[in-house]
Image (tube, rainbow, N blue to C red):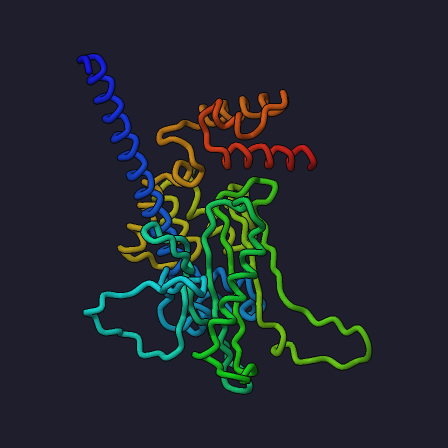
Length: 347
């Protein structure tokens, strides 16, 4: 091989290595961003706002009461596999468990290392009742987009079904179906188009009496609830406290200090050193870059230009995949731009 050929081969190898390093760096940054987002949401004070807005059981209580009285133990993050045939995340075998509870409490999303899907955040919330107390098993998922290529409510229903079936052997055995605890899966969608931003949708079982006047007790069928909170730019000014709080935390426009001021002054949340570090990480890692699939460093002007070009090419009949190749943006992002545009035109 001549020196020219060897030089081309070396250059190609270096380019491949650089590309791989950039990919790893991007994945690590995305992972860290997601981790910081989970750590912020998993704060009891933040979960209290979510529960008050999402579930009727907590609507009558103050967020302080919910945080201090009704969220039991420490929320678990990314520990239990969702799919039955996937292994749970194992702790260091040399460490003794500090959890003396018998009942398992799952948590997670997708592990970068083994492909296992875990529940993001999982915890137990309680309510006082005449018969003692009621426990609700709650899963909270943080979704970068509300249009991931499948209907979020369907995924939420699957998660609640798994939370029900996983109770067998820990909460109930054999025919003890009366012991089944209610489950709820709450989805927080960060990057939402304005036409869907600042909305909350809830899906649950209801009784329909087709003949006669007999009614079962609600507690015996109201066992699965899915709630989708869509955040976004409009959400920053929402009249709903949970939407406004979360939209501000995930905002790419607000500064670190703006977010801290909102937590402390607007939402009356005492910010620990650890929580302030997580908020800083969210700001530094730039959600607008890592959650939307754009290249690092793209400006708002460049993004606007890319969208405009995508619209023009689509109007000329070019398929989504070809548009993505042409403007060098990932296909999912381009398809989402086009879908959002269609929604705005319909409106």
